[in-house]
Amino acid sequence: MKVVQVQFAPWDKAYNFSPNNIDLEKGDKVVVKTELGVELGEVVGFLDTDEEEYEKKQNNAGTGRDLSPEEAEDSREDGANTESAENHKHKALKPILRKATPLDMEKIPSAADKNKALEYCRQTKEKSGLAMKFIDMHYSFDGSRITFAFIADGRVDFRELVKDLTRHFGRTIRLQQIGIRDEAKFSGDIGHCGRQLCCRRFLSELSSITSEMAECQQCSHRGSERISGLCGRLMCCLAYEEAGYEKLTKNLPPLGSKVRIEGKRGTVVGYHVLKQTVDVEIETEKGERGTIVEMDLKGNKKN
Image 1 (tube, rainbow, N blue to C red):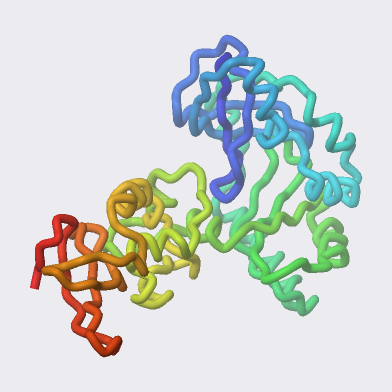
Image 2: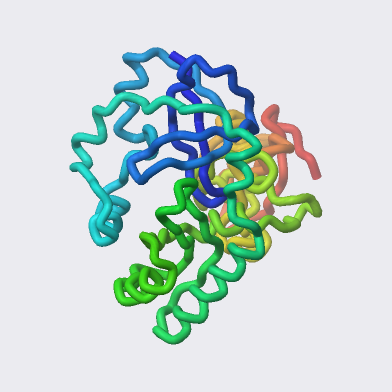
């Protein structure tokens, strides 16, 4: 079973569709029909999976841009036709209608039109005094809906703002809250390494990055500023070598282990994963804290 992943906005997730026997490549523009209307999106990937296995995972995947509970709630306020989240779980993949034609591409609003609409939205938000930051906007292909993407620290009651925007634009308005990492992925910039952000260049999914990854790689002591990206979250690259560090760590004795070095008892008080050495504190006859030496896994001193 082949599944096509289509993305409608750079800050939005990818949704799954059936290829409908259309020969597609990554980067192709396609026209599809979703629960929210006809959309034009970009092919960003493919999945080859067993149909039965896919059905089991379907609850956790976007299938044909079905509505999440949060989207369903927003759409009910916008007057869209929705069904229960439970019904959406069991729907078959929606087919891709066709590849986008030059005439289809001409219908996409210009950057100037988008900037003008986005600026009006920001000005209206300022008048409302809402604590939210608008990042981008997206016109639906059929012209019936405008989606504004924003970030905020928490939930925002934007119902009055939606009413104002609906009156001004004369279309269905959706406000979609995105994460700060999604903003960085959309905006793009240069990371600490001097290269363009990974999330901008090649990361299709933003995985969970934990403090345990930094601790395992012995870089948590550098401070959050040095191991955090432009988004303010822990850098995605901490996940790249996690498996290698975990494998090397298994070779080292746990902290607190008792070892013998040159006939003396000692306690492991630290370790160096890449060097595959440990710091051992030598016990004194009086039980006082002794000298700390570095040794390899064969018991040889390194300093």
